[in-house]
Length: 60
Image 1 (cartoon, rainbow, N blue to C red):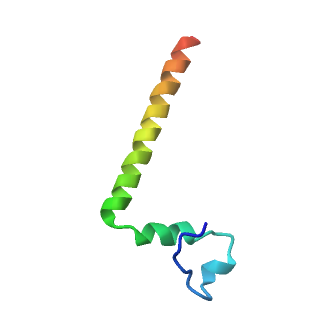
Image 2 (tube, rainbow, N blue to C red):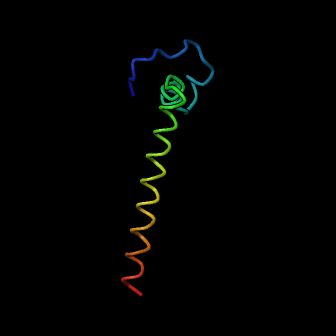
């Protein structure tokens, strides 16, 4: 994922199996932006969980 943030050259993680571009991107966000992303992900999870419960109830 190219997010416009240059990776650190010769970083030990660069040669590993870990894609650090998302870590670098998240670290470039402000606290408020990270909090907003977290809240949106939590809201999506809760919606999916609730829909799963409703679907499960239909088949009981």
